[in-house]
Length: 160
Image 1 (cartoon, rainbow, N blue to C red):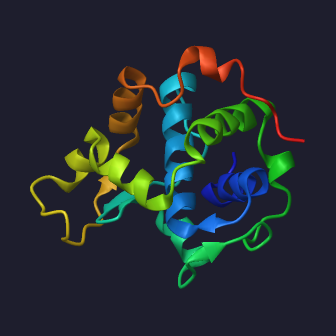
Image 2 (cartoon, rainbow, N blue to C red):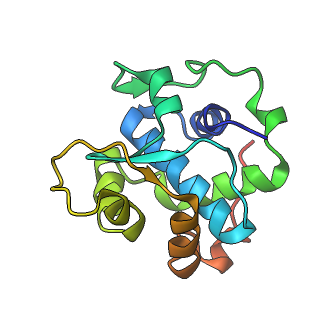
């Protein structure tokens, strides 16, 4: 199975340099799309309900202290070989829909959605939080509230 770092490396390869916040959110939405559409995760690692939105600690450890991250800056061998074609298509579909958004816009979006809100409970938005956003909650919410419309998923071009 791929890791969150494999997925993040593939996102960077597909979309180019971006803020680390945006990378975290695209990895989160790729995981959500996989759980909702395919019924299983892209990777085992979990996301926590940080004040800036969902963050995966394992990915954060690889980019800590950076604002921008570029292709080749994550420690992976070959994300192309680690990910199946179906997994790449899932990530491609999410990137096609969301990669034009900024990290801040994606963070605001996650704050309006139930998985992040449920994990944070009654905490104020500015309070620190390390509660895990459960994969079950993610799967149920995004199955009912798709990130990628069915018709869009079939039309996503594969990057060269």
